[in-house]
Image (tube, rainbow, N blue to C red; front, side):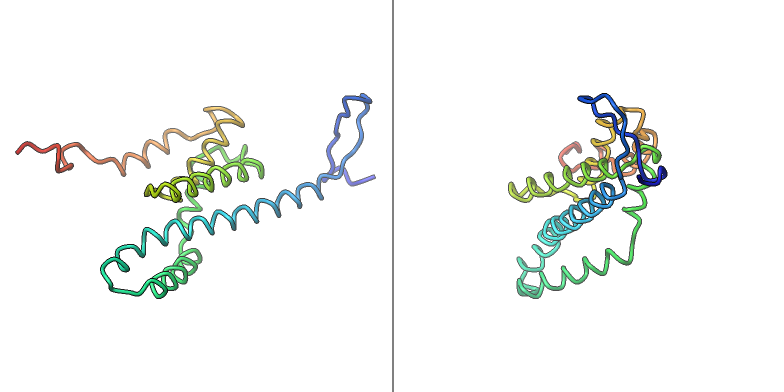
Length: 174
């Protein structure tokens, strides 16, 4: 028998009895899977952003390809340890905190990885951070519906990135 603080009752439909299942092993395995998937997302983020970052330096001849990629990979790693603002925003300001679970994080990461690989394959420039935000929001919508997303915060954050029609060069009168 296990401690009830780490066990939950599981209803076996075919026998109709309630037994105890040790979820601590299950949660640890799920946590390890999420960590591996997070590292895979970081890898796709790295090659996705590296291509966008080093293309101008290689195209202009400022750096050789090996040097540019090595410099970019080192700086991406350093940047991950220096600033946690994107992770803090995703973790605290986009969805209801009490509903976030390991499966939600897993689903958000898988969605972001799929988007990164798809946009990389078709050579479409995109943001890995926005892919992660979309993945987490999508997972929360599936899990708990529209009330789980903090829409007012999203609209405030996205309004700072909007571009007015007047600032676009092709929309100005000649």
